Image (cartoon, rainbow over all chains, first blue to last red; front, side, top):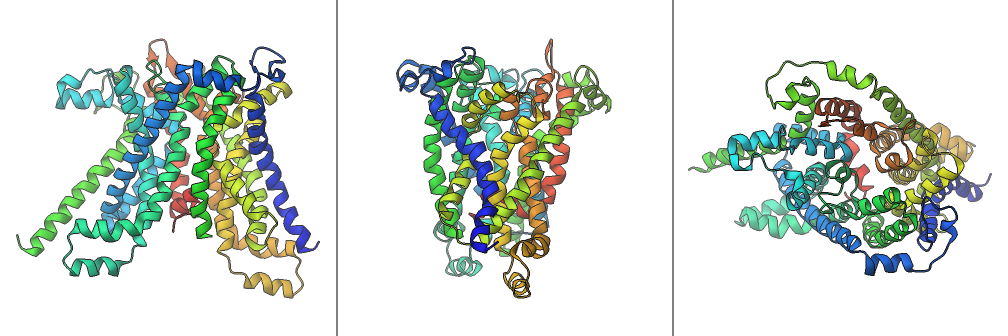
Length: 290
Length: 275
């Protein structure tokens, strides 16, 4: 077979798989979003109702806007905190040395914890009776000892954020350490010789050089924050009330618990829109490198 | 302080900060680890010092929890997903790396984009379809859906590895009369083997930890380990010692695999967008 034909045959199986497992369901979800779509009512997935599901989400469902708000706040806070803390940790670990290299190795270990498991472990640690934090505060700050972390809306949100930040710090730190390694040593030394303070060196030399890497990290983390489901499901299951109900969780609940598949699909599609913009931004970085 | 003293002071501060940060990063893991070896009584008493027991690891495999079945499901689903994904992804990655294709950029962008699709969007149609054709609660169904998240990742990652293989050996073999497929089989595959292994491990980890698909598509026969965690709720709430033991069983292989791919961690997670 000539290369000219062969090259398309080589990609064919992959294209078929990607189409069948991602593109088809995406299109099918769009179609479903315009139907009544009840799980327990046969034929309702062929009953078209136009934009009604979307209108319902926008105008009749405070719970939808609540989940939009929770997701947006969650994304902003987790992206901001994770990036800042990871940057700090990366600066601390980047210069090398034995302690720092072993620390970098240890950073891989939390990656072994799946998000679901992170959710479980934080629920355990924040248990008001026999969690780690109960013990810690019992000794250090007694008034905080018996706080029911996951029963209070604000505190529960804070714990969910904490779990997410904890889980993503290692990845972001390692990426940023890689980025720091590519900042030319001599520019930094030249600035130091000129008498610039560490802060000035960081602000005027390191940070601008790190810009593209930081951008990639922020885009990637935003994508993952927007999608968050696993650890929220395991940690608070969206509660108390709907205080930690992210969009993914809202879609899951409406679809699988209430059987409103059509409505779920419409909210799911609304979620795809910001994803497209973020993916586009991310793709620009990937293709610049290739 | 003299300059030298100041330097020593700051490096001591750094060392303390690093150790503190590492402690914070490892505490949740340690906490689960300790609880997995505590007895039913000790885990509810917040003891730091206790007599470790292996009992929990036996209990989780016994009735009614039978974690062994979930372990088997997880292993089969993750392994078969990888075994299907890697060869298909390799062929595509080779073509993307070595040839110019009509619509190549568009295809690559779409493949990249599918990796970021929220799982909850693609799972709704699959649920309906699987319900209608009887694939709900089967390992086969789970494998098919897992391909959605593993395939784009594998294509991009393997493409990165093949891009790094120099062309001359391939060209020399072609001059000697090898066909393109022979070149792929005899030259590219052996040279790309470490990359394929790394990609395979990444995909295995993704499939092993996958949660939402398994939550929606399984309920009894094909339940995987992460969903199995939900079993450990008793009359009086979570059974923390058993949950922790199950957590260790989920984590253990991931620890080993994560350490194996350490070198490629950043590259794999960012698809080469960084560096």
